[in-house]
Image (tube, rainbow, N blue to C red):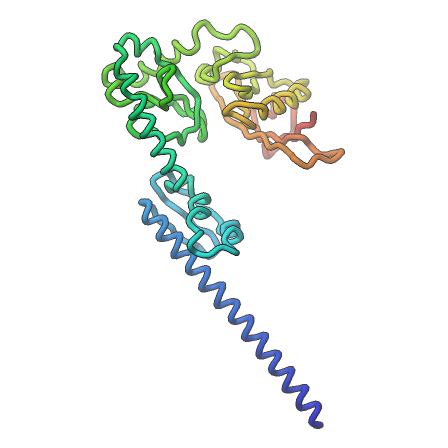
Length: 316
């Protein structure tokens, strides 16, 4: 074998070794980073009263004070790819916020505590009769911080609940001492607040109080109905086969303003009220939908739409 061939063979051998070393180094780096991420998540969960259990599929099951569930780590790995470990906490907290208190929730809790200190004396100064007259029901997110407050809440869905508040006071419930002053059961207090809120009832196919979701039969009657929030009120349509055009208008109105953007409520005409999600498409082609609504079976059946998975595409 000539000297040139020997040199070439040696160079190729060195190149192969270099590639092998590079691949091994990258795998070792990835493995070490993965282990650091798992350790970080475990520590993060334990510091907040929870736990993290990893599986062989690249996911983790988290149990915490706010709930439990399984998450894939794929998105989190992408989020942290170019970040130093000192900046991981915000992203980890965001991904697991449904199960573990994070910095945002702590900030909300601090703000709620400050509101209670500032506005609590105003409620305490009311007589029991004045307090009863100012009780109202407000629909809001089920995760609203209620430290130091009694809400007498009724869940409407996984995301929303109806809670008792005092009219004109920026608090998400009743201060504990004032709830004691009212006496009675939480159900009694809730019913009194609901009566104060709804009054005589709506007169047309729109109302100014989303609290009517607590009495859907009185609002929608016995016909399957689809409703959305507009501002702090509600608008709705009967769920009928000829209502697909109106459904597009309903979706469009749902994303205008208010605390229930892109949320639809489906009433079965008897005793079932379910929250649905409206997906707004931002890239619209000539044949693509403007919205996709995830509806329960009774709603798709009433609309006459074949949608085994409940997803209904809607065009304006």
